[in-house]
Length: 228
Image (cartoon, rainbow, N blue to C red):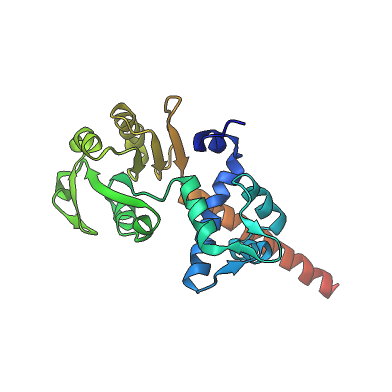
């Protein structure tokens, strides 16, 4: 039987499972930091905030890493998931747009600990140039192509205003970036072969506001019912 390559295995993993793998990895890192060598599927599921049946189904796409009666070796499973999602090496990242959000992203220590190295901070505003943020100098956006080529960058982060996001994405795609994390409140049009993940903070807050409103309405109904 011919062995499957890692890329073939990756294509067989459902997107919903791929989205949960970093959650499992984060839970495993926490368990390892707490000195826990092994864990059951129930313990890992609780730490990750999912049900154990879903976790076991997700991990089955990666292979058989659990031992009946013992559970999962935390360090080994952590490595296998990290390898599957590609964070056993450093990925060079550029951040474009160094306003308040860009500053916060540049200062986020989780990038380095999770396998991402911010190699450049870029902004079109000359007033920003030369500023040092988290040890990295802010440079002109016009240097994007040069930096991407020199550092072999495949991942770009957009933290610009909405009006500038599409033109930034076009430049990124044009110089070879194939994965974009978009914090701008806009929908990007990109060609096939380029992956875009959108993070809309205002949308997430609106969803939380909806749930808060529902809880308030439910509480009011219960109060009315109790008074009746």
